[in-house]
Length: 225
Image (tube, rainbow, N blue to C red; front, side):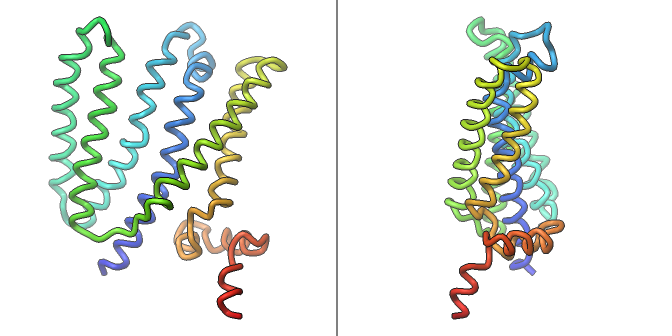
């Protein structure tokens, strides 16, 4: 039972990382263009959004971790870790927000630290409760490489487009291109192995397509020979 649970939790955390990391860094890179796109009368919110974007990765990982803990019967743990995070945020708000050096940015910083510590505590308890298969290269290095490639290519494209089309349209196109680039990088880097692809929704069909175009299946054929 725990073997299956470990695989599913590990895969859930990997999927969360793959989805959360590009959202975090994408929001940081395109914070100002996004603010100009959504709130043209409040262009000064770009830096604040950049800080808040750091909460995304920790918040989504915390949700997945807490869900896993609840599934393992540790229902109280998420409530306790969330409470500790909220209290830490309250203390930091009282310290940072009145400080002229931080002001409203202090609230954003407090939110980042709150989500980080809540996730960190839950994650520590989770890995002590069940053995997870979280390879560092697969879980951290490859998603970071894919994310950096996405950010670099899409932002470079954005700088070119703003000299040709409107800033709003350039922002939208750059974000769409970023999604495509990231998806391609995830496939090229083979972040998911064959077993994991089959486990995700529509994974069987996706695996057949990737195997047909030669992305997967090569190692298997070599082993059979």
